[in-house]
Length: 282
Image 1 (cartoon, rainbow, N blue to C red):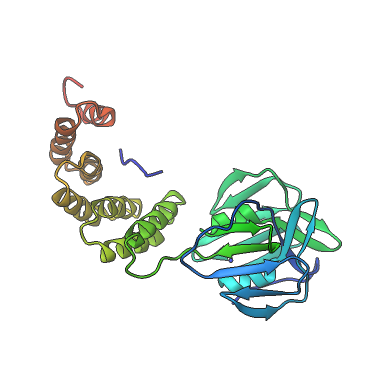
Image 2 (cartoon, rainbow, N blue to C red):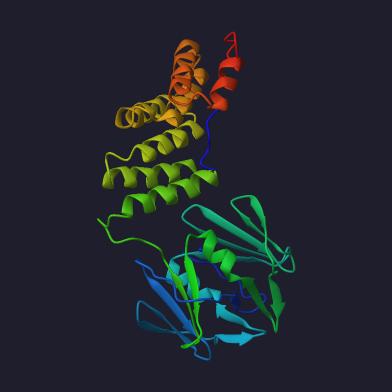
């Protein structure tokens, strides 16, 4: 019944230097975190303005900008692995695993397959990846600056104490929750709560992550706190009812579901839950 708010580095040289294919357009995006910049025609890149050398050159072909993934990986603290037998590239960072296969228009993020409009390819003994999808999978922002012919990747992290910080970490938690990474989600939600102890939504969502780990008592404690902060929080009551039902505490589950309907008489999932629990009239 719970509603879900629904790159050490290893580089194998069997196919040459792995390069990242970035295809971006549009204005430069604002960012509050580190910026990694690659400029077309140059064998160097910058991290927050500091210059680092590369052994490959950024270039454009068919309106696409190609950037060496090795250096992007180093800049972002990620790992890259190449599997020759399957022609698969795997990038990992902080619990997120991204897999792409040569000539296949699909990207797999923590086991979940998503379609792409371009495919990874091998050219001149180089492997290229569709960078926009890869960057977004790791929570980065990417932009193309036509004037400077530069592609920038932003490690999106807010300044500590900024008014948006708690929302930023809540959103990171939501993303990890959606990927089934419940421990990572809990860490992000906890950071949001640390920044804003009255953030009812973060408590509610962290409760769901605890439920995903089977820690129902901790989930209930978070739902209780969310309800304390917002007594009309129907979703928190609903999720708490689910936790109680999993613990076999049917009467408490029924009580919470009825409370949901007091707050929102059109909450269909609450009615369905009462019916599943055998309550007459539903």
